[in-house]
Length: 459
Ligand SMILES: *Cc1c(COP(=O)(O)O)cnc(C)c1O
Image (cartoon, rainbow, N blue to C red; front, side, top):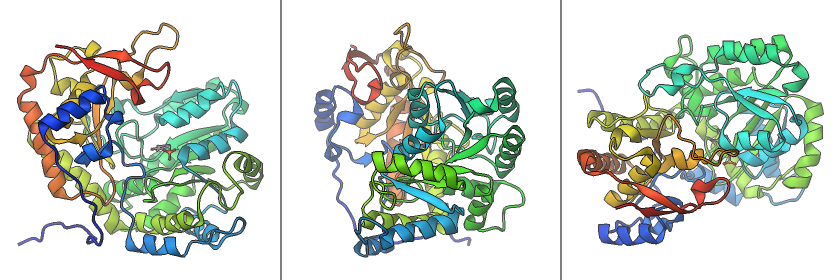
């Protein structure tokens, strides 16, 4: 008999979570104005709001915390982090920052100017925000396959080389500070970029004199997909693949809350000493001295250890197989999800799931609230609330896809939890014909409304 798959770790410390009754949840979500961000975490049984900073650290990471050196300058912990980044990604220069968006803020302060264009594969919200804040423009060059939830392309995060070359041809190179490769492509559903595409982007960029930035939040998950899906990489280790990937990067910005498996932290990697030196000034202004940049010594130590663990095959296999386990269960139940299943989350196609709810009534949000009511599970809306209003007309923007994202924290839940999530969604799916109405807005902020919006049920 073939042995089944099991997690590559065992549990040393646990945190109690509490189930609640449907009556309790109805009261709590009403008080939260039907916005899942407004719920106390104690009111949530299984929290899939995000995989950012929500993972479980290992015994070795906690041990490293105790050895943290809190010296202001030149701390041992800083050097541990420097060594880990050099060994794993190959960068000679780096700056610690308090999280990923802070890394963007510091690096873009050096590189991005008004009137610039920054091509990339579905820039992450904060990346786009930091580009647009500087009155530059983000141009999405993701392949078209990424926007079809049923297309089984193995590397849906890829950049379309033709679209990229179009951008390079139509703008002078002085106006293009870099191209961003987001690994994995978060916005397109945690979809990976192939090594072949990384190489093609780097070669084209070199030809046109444009630098390459890796938005690296889930670089290790990306390497796992290269190993398991791309010809020629089967027998390489994750660490070998990661080193090869970073041969093609000039810079990296990292949200360590993802693949470095820490609760807070980030960094910038540089190959270019001159840019590093310029960025040091901004780091000192915005983040902290260049050898701590907003991080405690203990956190830098945990990050160094997390980078090493996060690039081990057994850990990644456990992680990505758990996400796939949930996705496959949903597919088995006939529930419409984005395919192939990505690295960090399962995306439920809310329009197909709740076909009778009108788009003006926030379909994915309606599904998110319903899943919470069903079982105390908290996902996040990737739909009309997130897409916000057109800045000029102030009309709602209706995206093609209304998705409910179920992000799986690292090493945190078991497959029994995945079974509960799948069963809860199945129950909602089975009563989809009865769900005809959604929500209307009572109050919203002028930008980024989804975090704080207040809603009312339409009867
Ligand atoms: C999370 C994330 C960021 C921003 O990082 P924070 O640590 O949340 O500031 C940037 N890019 C991608 C792809 C991310 O997933």
